[in-house]
Length: 430
Image 1 (tube, rainbow, N blue to C red):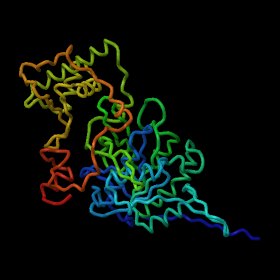
Image 2 (cartoon, rainbow, N blue to C red):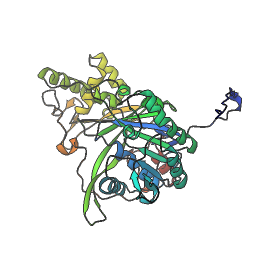
Image 3 (cartoon, rainbow, N blue to C red):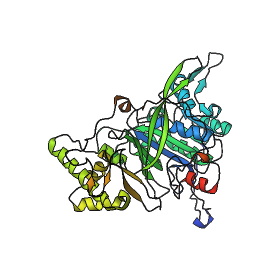
Image 4 (tube, rainbow, N blue to C red):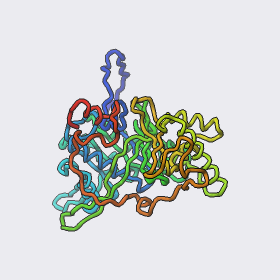
């Protein structure tokens, strides 16, 4: 039998013949700050239990209602979820209910195989073996979000080998490009500290293949969940954001009640995952004295500012001049209890400001702060057991759709650049 003749030739395309286009965003929490792009892959990584899957389910729920900020805002979109480690009947669907998802727009996908007349068997999707079946599902549902969780366990080959990772996921990324969907690959962190870029488990190909990398961690001092964009190929911004997990009771179809986590998105933060995972351990008396000294310096600095407020960069610069490191001043801000020092975006869009806020009954004395001296400052305490386990207990029920008449949940007064604030100003429904 004659072997088929294979030929090849070079294809040259002048750049002038390639039509340019704007990069579109699946999720853009603030205008000009795209986080999850359309038409390519995003990787979300962190230690187990950091809320990665729950956060992505929240985005899927918002998208199913047409309330997701980005280029798909106003469209009720479908999501396909492949291979989560959690059970659908006891965890996934209750979480989706708690997030207010339209359950008819979120799909679980498996592969059914049958030989002749034998009973069909169901198995999980594998890559790259089943990419064609995924494409059929994308076409049938019109889905705009595809979540693979956890990505390493659903590939063929070794997650630590560059070639195996590329052979498994390059076809799926090509599918995302053809259908202009957001592909989210969920992965885990390796052990130890170091740079966020090097924390991804497995081969560096995971980071190389994707165009956006979101790293998740919990700030044990505040109990807040933080995720930072360590890589963003399509925009200059690589911001950090915070959220909390609230415990919500959901009635299941068998008449019982299930307590599941729901995301409460809290907006931007100047805290980063890199700072959290590399935070130096503290504990001896000398360290405590140093921390108290940094807090005292920061409070003394702010008391001489109008409205007890100053640009964050000025606080860091002054702290450096006084002999403190940037991390010491940042950590001092977080540990201050009375006054608490909040970090927030300037109302004029000129960066971050630090603002002191006093508890009830404490006088703002221009000559000093009542009851706040190095020896009286309250040291940071570990989070409660519930926060350590990842859920803040609350007596709440699934929320109803929000409208601009409620005001912006993140900013008061409103600021330029926030989708919600701008829509309130323009009188447009969110």
